[in-house]
Length: 192
Ligand code: NI
Image (cartoon, rainbow, N blue to C red; front, side, top):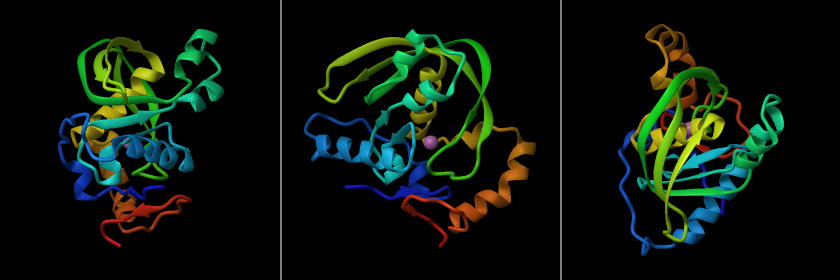
């Protein structure tokens, strides 16, 4: 089943999500459906709050970046590939220099902006079988994780932009919440 993606302005995108336990109803199916929804909309990540579920779960498959970013080593490309599930994740540490990368979001179609974030993270999370992992991750994969992790705390990438940039985007964002945007996947618009 594919979920509609909540659009910018939907109050559920602003909630702080809660941890889950292995007995969360229909969890494995939910994870599969989130991947299906993500691939359908050509995303590289999807967080549960984006489909209206206020739980600390996100899925990632950053393979498109392996194909389109030229300056990556074979090893770096390999790391981006494949389905990854993050449950009850905690970013324990962010380090390294800030770097700029153009981000987008399935909840904010048609807007792509440069966001500055630190380069490295140490993250603790559970996979879909509730096995615990602690990993050091950097580069684009860290970036995708930081973006998805923000969703769990009700934060969107546009929140990281300068107030000047935010003013410039205000009207576009308004239009997105009203459904006045071209998008080829199913969405739920809060002001339509
Ligand atoms: Ni997003």
